[in-house]
Length: 188
Image (tube, rainbow, N blue to C red; front, side):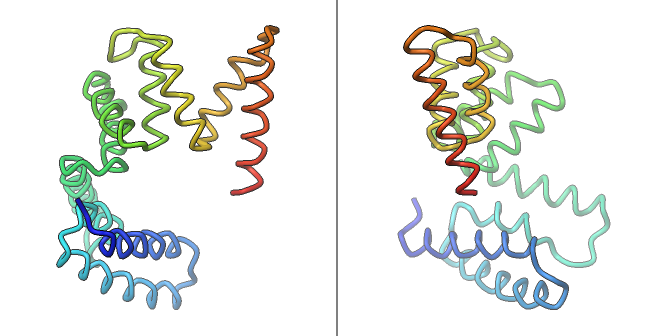
């Protein structure tokens, strides 16, 4: 398990990587250098997210095919290390290839670590019985977990589910999820 110091440094690198998507060329170069330096520091601390973060800062001068191979290897390494974001990425790849059972297994591993995108996907798999035995109540539970983390797709799914439910509980849930979605959209 990563120490608090390592978690803090990991969060900083994640934020810097996010910032890179909004930079002009000159600022990008500066932030990229800072991020690379901070990432090297994480390697020394043996952060389990190192390979995941490294995947978002590829070495220069790679062909498109080399970049794909490199990125996929980093994601697999991170997924195998138990990084929930990487497990989600790997699960999506399995799903796209039609290996729903492998995808659902990784969605569950990531969902059980609290990653909302995986909670939603795993919940859908359970609700629909795709890649796993159907269990609608358990599927709804996972979708509600994702909604509790303000994952918009989960909130929208639940709004659709309760939109026409005229029971007192159904109307209350529709109002709750509607308010959560409104708050989430204004917050982001």
